[in-house]
Image 1 (cartoon, rainbow, N blue to C red):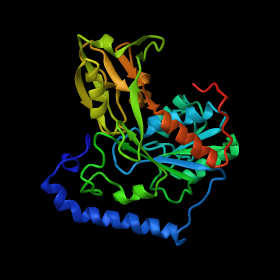
Image 2 (cartoon, rainbow, N blue to C red):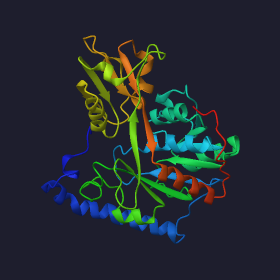
Image 3 (cartoon, helix red, strand yellow):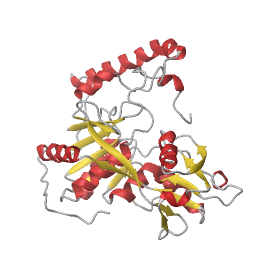
Length: 337
């Protein structure tokens, strides 16, 4: 599936017909949460506070850029931060495993490598997030661990839950899978600690925005160009993230004429899929770059994106972390890149 079904975000007969299936998914999520709440099933702690950053909707909401921004925010204030993630589509046989900036994305997953590169903090990946978190706590002595996704991974005990919402698509038709985009019913939002909107925030939400930087050449990373420098020529836009349209619109908003090449989220690229029979530049997201750089040439460019947090959101995050008993030094600036 390259893009979310149309009926998730617009009135459609198919969504109504699938609604009973969505009710079953919602009921299962409610019963499962109740089982953990009343001790029928047990959550397990890692050894230090855990902050889960996740979403209710499938597809991209901006969760990974927010994780990166939070990790940098805390590390810059002297907090020893670690990040855990699932390592989705990683083919490694041993889990959990620590992830380095030069780890093979095919083994540990594309998002895991991106997190290791962009945060500069210890990262561990594995389907069992408890085991991944314990590795970081024991080996890196983390003060706090951020879980990339895992809102529904209830075996992992958490101290704080943050939900990220795409301000453009919001919650779609408000139905659970397969009738709509939700993994859990909307009532789940009442139990989380913080709701962050990627874009204009509604009442009770905090705001962030995604800001693209200069394109970086994959053959020569010292070579950068502002996106506006690609105006006046057609460029190939390659994208395999959860919400490809956001990436395409970002390029078009800078005045670029793009040839769209959407792929499924986490797609394992082959060389021939990003080599085109012309000399036009090829622009791609950071998450796709980590899988393509080994066979890239001078035509290939990475478009990095940073989550810019509102002042109110930064203040709220720091207050939450202090409330966990973590010492946050407002004057400390780390060397995290």
